[in-house]
Length: 214
Image 1 (spheres, rainbow, N blue to C red):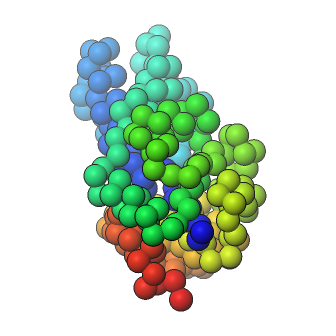
Image 2 (spheres, rainbow, N blue to C red):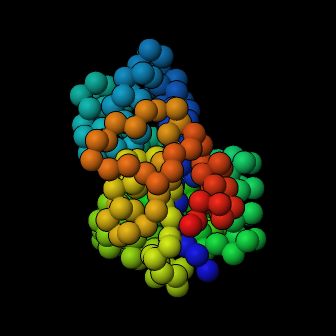
């Protein structure tokens, strides 16, 4: 079966929306200013800021408030899967694609997102950087995804929202790629995705329909 690798955060699931909801609850529960929400979102940087740095910044700003549960589980506990993405995955499997999640992050958190959203029942497997010992865009994590599916990287696709992690990573292993732009312009001058789509459901359907696989 052909291999379709898909990023998790802000590709399969809206991780930023989940973090925003968690941050809103965190501020409310501790009586902190509502206006700090934008600061928290900027600090988090869609999950790309190392957790240690986020924890340190929270400690400096809020003193003795315990933010550990918020950092560890806030977003993970609020992750949901949209109907369009769910339907696109079901269609992809129905026409013979092996779908594997390839995500950077901590194993427990990422698996919680995968299971809570029901993705564990819709994909053939997943590779998480902490468990794999390699992070996107390192080629080893993509080879691990192929091994999980028992598929070849030759002819495979990678879908993701991150230019350096997903698109450059795919290029490094000879896979084709779809960048989920969410309306953003492409800014990398040295490489480009094979395709660009505004959302993940349309990305999955572009690949699995067969019209872009030649």
